[in-house]
Image 1 (cartoon, rainbow, N blue to C red):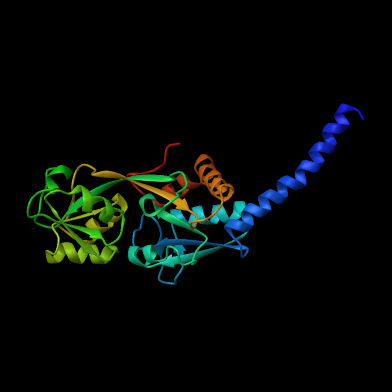
Image 2 (cartoon, rainbow, N blue to C red):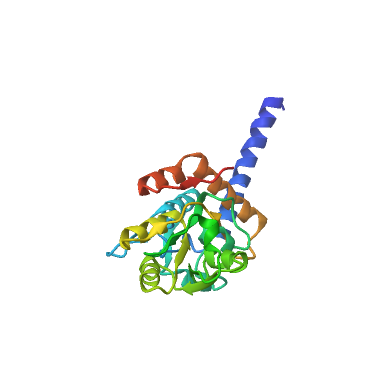
Amino acid sequence: MPSFLVAVVVAALALPAAAQAQHSVSGEIAPNGTLRVGFQTASPILARRAPDGSVSGVVVDLGRFIAARLDVAFEPVVYANQEAYAQSFGKGEWDVVIGVRGSMTDPSPDFMVADAMYIAAPGRTFADATRVDSSGVKVGVSRGGGSDRILSQALKSAQVVRVPGGVSNAVEALRSGTVDAWAANPVTLREIEDALPGSRVVPGAWTTGRYAASLPEGRSVAARSELADIVNEAKRTGVVQRSIDQAGFKGVHVAPD
């Protein structure tokens, strides 16, 4: 058989095998033919829930993109706060979860990064982020969130005060004097500042927040690799950047490769 015909035959045989492998990976990631994407809406940098119950935001756009690449339907699995989100792990409630990287055991590449900062309560001033870690200062964090995990270990003098997540809870903690400062991403802090006259974002970041996607534990290397490839494609093709731009976020960026 001529060599070019051999090549054609080999290619023809390989195509079904490749398609079958792709179908197998998609079936592992979304075994019910629908991609259930878990995320929380207490932090506006991730997603928002409208009064009519609909959700929107960067993680929603990324979740839709992942589902489209797997050729399955998208189904949001929405948690009202960080605590409910954290408690969902290991319960089989979602197929993919998107959020703060530190909450995941085997995350994808980062898709988004943002400086984590403080906002001072009305009447409190701090020259910069390093001055917050001082004796007598109470720092509010969303219970179980990234700020909680990091600052509970990093702060040496200030006291960490854990509060249920959400902008309204943060505003009340600052207004009432329960905390002197609140730690979060820049999007959440700007919403707090808008809602609480006299509050001010403290100059300087105490860390960089990193956001990623993850599968439940026990998924195959092929499935994890497929998710990583899709997340990287969402970054490369502008899906993540367009979502950030549409939301009008400041201080939020597509994660570097």
